[in-house]
Image 1 (cartoon, rainbow, N blue to C red):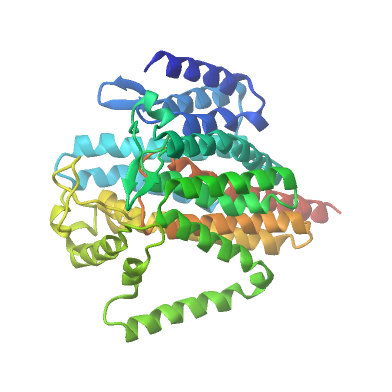
Image 2: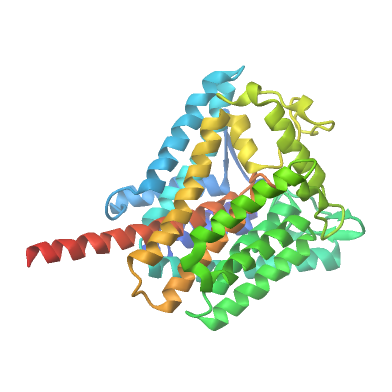
Length: 429
């Protein structure tokens, strides 16, 4: 860890220990936004990035201050724990269980550490709004850095390692990384935050407008088709706001449309991914072929994952001779822990959408501003769901997925707590 990174960690660690609960997520967000995976320390087989070190500090804080969740664990909380349990148990199905266990322990530590830590800090709708106001401001330097990367052809975050000094060029277009491990992941952060920035409009127009401009800047600077498509789908989800009472019919319509395409197309409908090329040089065909290959070889990975996918595709990856490029987060879950891990991850997403609907219907007297913000969180989750078909979160960008789930989960917990208190008062009288 270089001197600047060490100073950054020290300042954010102190802030995490002493800031009020409402502001406690700020150092964690800063760790994800401003520090690459190139900075950290090695302890035996374990690699602790700056963000992982901050998670340790965060749990030390909640133990010292006695902070905890309010109310009982909800369904997403439990599903996260079950998902984590199977991720570790499935290590036994791999050739080197010890190495597999260490690797999965890192994934579980990242996901559950961030999820439960910020869940404890973020307990109400107002906390969620504050969380994304902070996010809007924290993304501003990233947007400027990625624009600078385009103009100066130099990545400012390269001083921390883990990202290249010179950005990629594909089809004549510069693809900025910022602090993230790939331009697609950088653009994805902007895309999945965009609908939630729009959701802030009725609460704070200036912050919302700032966030919208910043998110668009990040998406454009990444020069990647995936984030552009994710942003378009997120905006489409926002536009369904007037039809929120008819979502069941819309879901059935989408399902039957996919089935119809399956019947009339010569190839599975997911091959439409291969026809999408917005920014130029898209690898949509690879993503579609990967899905087909995974289904063809499902007998190899369905139970507990697999250690070898190189034969699935004509091309491999430079960092591992045994694997192809798994550009699909759902399939990445399958490779790690089989169908059980994949389905548990999908169940977390499904439950997130369910909580959005229930939070809107349980308290219909919430202000329109509050309801639209909840809907925007659902649109953000939809963007993550669509993005996961074409990218695997393999850097600190995973925080933004769990930030979205945390927000939905916390609002639902607040909703049922209010409901329980109301029922208790009615029984008392």
